Amino acid sequence: MDTSEKEKIDNLREFVTSLPQLTNMVTTHHFAGGMYLRKVWRAAGTLVCGREHLTEHFFMCMSGQIIVYMAGNNVTLYPGDIISCPIGSIKITYSPVDSIGANVFKTNKTDLAELEAELLVDEPGCMYDFDNKVKDLQLNEQKLKELIL
Image 1 (cartoon, rainbow, N blue to C red):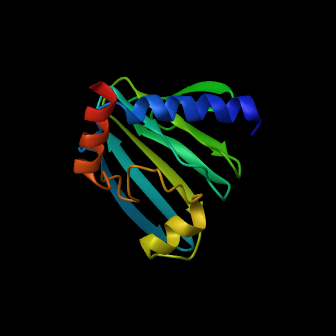
Image 2 (image 1 turned 90 degrees about the vertical axis):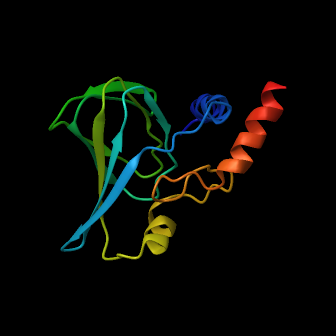
Image 3 (image 1 turned 180 degrees about the vertical axis):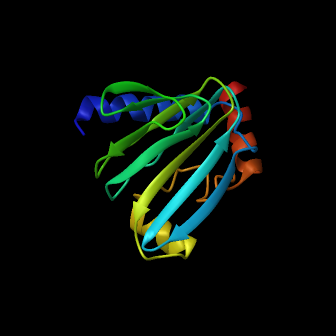
């Protein structure tokens, strides 16, 4: 990823961090034969700034509509659409309607902490855990108040 692309993503993350954080994404984890599927339901209007991935994987729209920005390109996915995501990819997704997106990875791990370490770059400033729960909602609310006041 080139520097200007990284700067765009960092600027978007900084902006999104200043907004109220979602607490209603539903993440489920599925395992079969050396594969791991991470499925995320998101409400209409949800913007997700993903983390950098350490492995090649698939991303698919299972329901709704998901607009994906990755590597300088936009693609709109509808149910059944699948894209391949290379090592180092960072996906920014927007769902104009309630949607379900899923990542599929090749791995034999089933422990969520081990999966996170294997699949994603560690980003200490990331506001969500691997289950898409806000890490510290009170801290985020305080940061939001500091940015607004």
